[in-house]
Image (cartoon, rainbow, N blue to C red):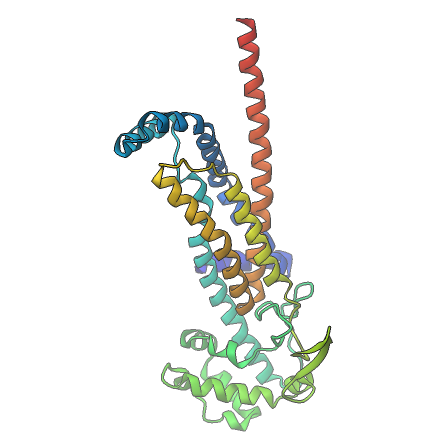
Length: 342
């Protein structure tokens, strides 16, 4: 996980913006996974080409399920095909998603702590936030219902080890000199047993700083805007426009639909393919909902990674299919040409 974070930091040292660094990092990840995507597309085409043979096996052995399964298994082995080939990209993406989720969480937590310390050390000065296009702070959710500045819910997600890693006694003394209410804080205050009370104290202090008061226009920091026949409350210093969460759901739905459309229809008596089809139908709806939820509740940097990954994968799938179509057409032309010569 630290390895991935160091790669992102390295890209950012050249690009100078964490948003574009995430885009380039995602492109790098998809390039690494490209050979697996290509192999998966080839495997699904093999399965499609085998459908006539499977129909013939079903006609011959359909009444004997054990015999039918044996013949299908033998055919798969002979042709080098696999009924699970269509699930390979998702099976690869899921563990990578978990790894990236953990990496982004660790990295975002570090950035959150740095922003808190910066504001407490300079309570009159707005900190320099890591922005990207319409997002004011990449380490907060892309949402008009989320503040650009760190809120209490985000602070509660930061574990003890991150505070211990980025804070020291000297820093706490400097902060206490500016904020008497934090005079009792020590490194022991960030132990797990006292962390909840410490976080509440830190957030209360942040809300009293000039930076937070100015951003909120006076607490609680909400404003009402008219939408059709009602009003919606948003943060006065809101962080985003919900674009990435919505794009994550839309792109995920499109991606799962594309993968589903490229898979062959299962034979009536093929239990393995029937199970695979049912799984694909479930994932077609589950992953978009999951993407929307996670990008709504998590930071914009991770949402940017997920949307970019989906878009690149869609382009990759389209390009691979076009290449394989051209290759199949060329092979068919060659075969037909040889047949006519004979």
